[in-house]
Image 1 (tube, rainbow, N blue to C red):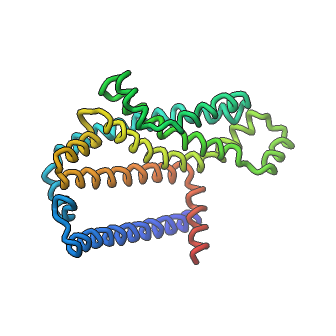
Image 2 (image 1 turned 90 degrees about the vertical axis):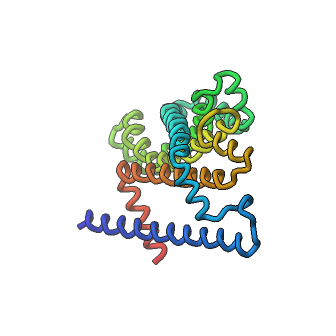
Image 3 (image 1 turned 90 degrees about the horizontal axis):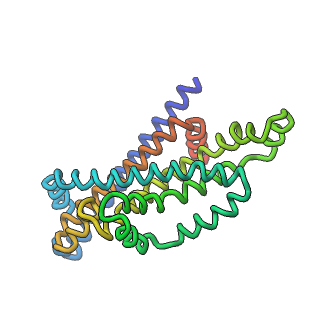
Length: 271
């Protein structure tokens, strides 16, 4: 019965989210058309939605080729961020000297404008994948680290006291209490990190590249090809939404108990 209830709750939430998304998209398109007709905006400044859709269809091979490049840079940067963030988060929580050493460095790296660092990486590593992956990584790692550290520390003292009373070692408490408790936080960091990773890849492509969606935006901008520019932006919106949804799907599979509890709380609150 519990599984059936969880399934019904999940399906209802999914249908509700889809309807809200559909309403938002319809409203956005209506505002888009209304702005063009009411203000008599010329096509070279703001193309109509149907013009942009035709441009996407006509330029589909070109868009797919450049999208694949940007997607590869985003995923590689995101994967590198996960590989680095998880052990760093564990080390920061486990050992105090690591926190005092690494956290100021991470904050410093996060505060440095990435748009200023990107040209330097291009000088060092050329116009290939490496500078884009590094910028993508630098934008994505910080929220993952912060969220995971928060999750490992946000453990009720009663639970830790109970574990100590049962003669659990510090390592056992860490593995069986702190790390599982950090998983919902970790996935929150992943969702934000995925979007920032995509932003980092596009930012690096702005600075210098010969392929990718960022390069295509610059190409369309220089040639005043507004329909192509909007087509790339629409592709980026879809790509960001799909990437975010994939992380959410993995979250449901990995920490389903947390997702169901959170959705149940939302239903109770709205009712």
